[in-house]
Image (cartoon, rainbow, N blue to C red; front, side, top):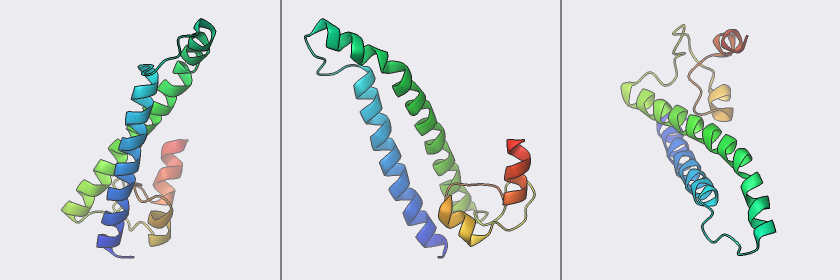
Length: 109
């Protein structure tokens, strides 16, 4: 895969994540909420889970935007921390990653 393939993949991911965020926002606002009080209580219990999913999606969206910016800058295939090459196989699995495996492992510790 070349830079254009990754850019296309990232743009598609960005659209999917944006759609997911919008759906979560609608669910949290309880648009079309049931008139039944017991169902409303159940729907509200799900808000915490939805907020967590929304936060995770927001973080993913920011990483996608950063990856697209790195493509424009010509630094997409380089680790943002150490400058070494990020293997194509890693980018195929995680197209929005900004770190090589070694740096990602250090960050997670």
